[in-house]
Length: 413
Ligand code: ADP
Ligand code: ASP
Ligand code: MG
Image (cartoon, rainbow, N blue to C red; front, side, top):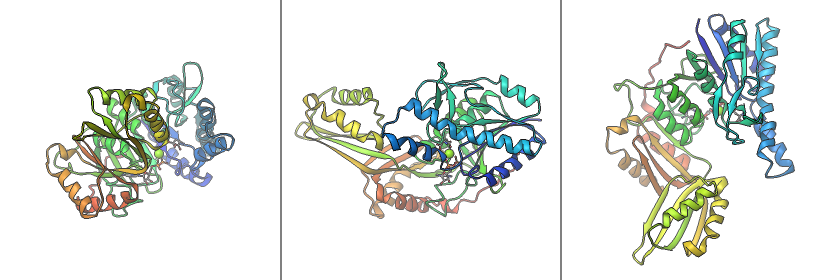
């Protein structure tokens, strides 16, 4: 008998009828294994709760938001437990604060620090399916916390790691991890296997199928993840440490981001320490900067462009404007309509020419590249947001991702 952690996303538990279907999956699995189920809030619930809070103010207290948002997942686990019990399946739900799932105190984006396994193990040994709400934890002071949007994935992988589970399965509304978002490119192909490193890049560059931190946990604890559909019980995608080099793809995925903005600080007198000063100021204000480009002009001035999360655009502009005395810029311009399109693949470590091909494909499609950033296994281009879906499509075709033949991996539970 193994121990399996199964996570179900918002769509999977989106109605009482769907919850009954999830209950079928859990009962079936519990015939052979101990089962922990991590559940999201019903689809739309977290957004609706946020909207209610914003009815009163645009800046609700983050502490109170966490108290509010935790109720979405609480409702899911209680309902599921009642559903299972009504079918004479032993089941028990524990909230994040009861387990406890201890986090830091960074409200709305907390990080998991420790998960106690005592209560969960006792309930499993007593024959219960254990239901755990995703996305929530508790700080040392007993304050409720949440883990950031999509955080139930992280809860599931962290619980699986803490329990040393044999398997962590992420059940969602799609059959696995695809070469790109199938809702944007219907020709996207399901990948049978992908490495943690590739998945980290895909997740952090826009593929929302897994929260980035869940993949960091999986990599750290070497926990295999199986991403699969709740509605069609066929093999999905395994996220693992290594993929056989024979199966590795030069490019395995294309992503685009939705919520980024660009700041251009123009014509600052060029001097040593200027970039250090600018980015220290932004750091002190809590603005996380991503891609940076500096152009040095001939007349001794310099322009620095950088990208930030869209929600932080006005804060970033304020920081720059309020230090005009020392930065001495001529202008500071903000553009909220940009997107970062990325090409990702482990094979890039040993293959050249991917960047050149990406730039040519974008140029041939008349898409102007504003900024470029690279790592060992990815190339990202900042472009006009309006062109992002078109860019994904032309790149997907040019790298022949629509021609991949998925190999079914059958060693799944
Ligand atoms: P859940 O509610 O189950 O957590 P999410 O909506 O968070 O599900 O994530 C699943 C969605 O991720 C898919 O419906 C799909 O639109 C999107 N997605 C984006 N990129 C990818 C990708 N490369 N592969 C699979 N899904 C992707
Ligand atoms: N309910 C939370 C959200 O909508 C967490 C999750 O579903 O993973 O972001
Ligand atoms: Mg999700």
